[in-house]
Amino acid sequence: MTALEMLAWAALNQVMDPELDEPITDLGFVRSVEATDDGHLTVHLRLPTSFCSPNFAYLMAGDAKDLLSRLPDAASVVVELDDHHDSGLINAGLAADAGYRGTFGAEAEDSLDELRLTFRRKAHTAAMERALSQEGMDVGARLGDLPDTPLTAALIRRREDLGLTVAPGDPVLVDDEGRPYPAPEAEFRLRRARSTRISIDGNAHFCRGLLRTRYPGSEADQAPRADERFLLPLAIPPVAEAS
Image (cartoon, rainbow, N blue to C red; front, top):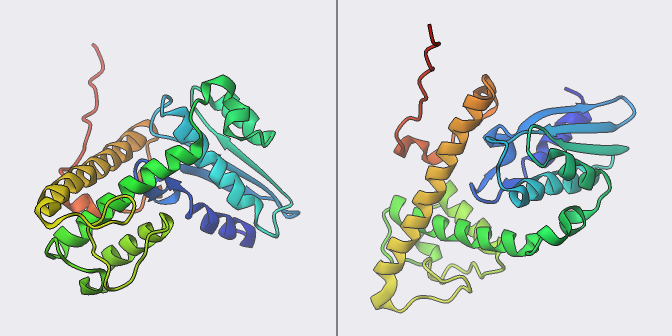
């Protein structure tokens, strides 16, 4: 792997699947990264199905191109999404730097900023639940009460993504605007947060299995998800050939 390809992989590690709250590199969505000696970079992406939401697909592919284009040694960047029902449209939009609305026109009713904010809030909600439940903390815990663990670091990072405060005295359990819930609501809000976290973890587990089924061997490109140990194994038995 060349130095530019290594830098490209590091940049792609910052691109998140908005719904699954994981880097596309860990999910195995990066099919290939190739760089020529004179700095022309080509990246191919893949998704678990051909009908994954086009706005999600464009968001990830667009973020990938934006980050790769900032690499100082990249003379040019081509990002292509393979095997998607909108591959032609998305790849043409990326090549022209047309943006989401410029690519999808009237079909792009909502901006990607709104989509990104929605899923950042969900990721923060799930991170609060993990920090409280899996660290064995009370619903009244403060950020300074949390142990120095990856779960706490993930929560802090998601709060910063939303522009929320991260002072040690701030309550862990807050709403989307960073406001603490009244004490009588706290347990209910934690249960709601748990349902969000389970939904994200379940979708991530399912999509990982779909990718492995669609692209045999892609499991080698997936990093273990921290919470997979809490889920049942997903295996799809082979279909017997008709005699």
